[in-house]
Image (cartoon, rainbow, N blue to C red):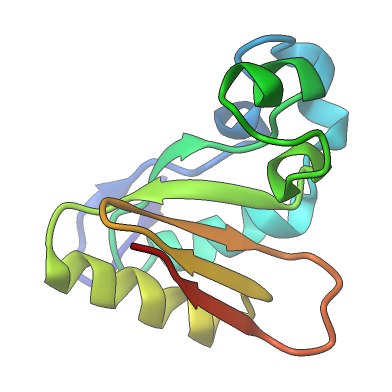
Length: 125
């Protein structure tokens, strides 16, 4: 267990937290370890509740996403937030720990480690 600044024990995030719900363990090798490292670094500053990570093309289609969506690459994770302060803390933790892409939605954020030359931040309604 890692210790946060507040001395509370926190759960370490593992690749199995990001596995596809459709193909489960067979998707573990497709998850970018840099995403897991990013989430654990963010978790030191604020609570990270992972909603989803890698999605196989079948699961992505079930959720109305395209086969080419970044969720199908293993380079992103979707994280829930419960207040504006929590959102601020998550964004700050992501940006200070090397996130390459950051999508902000009304109740979650998507962080990614795609090979982008610049950091991209998108706000969705």
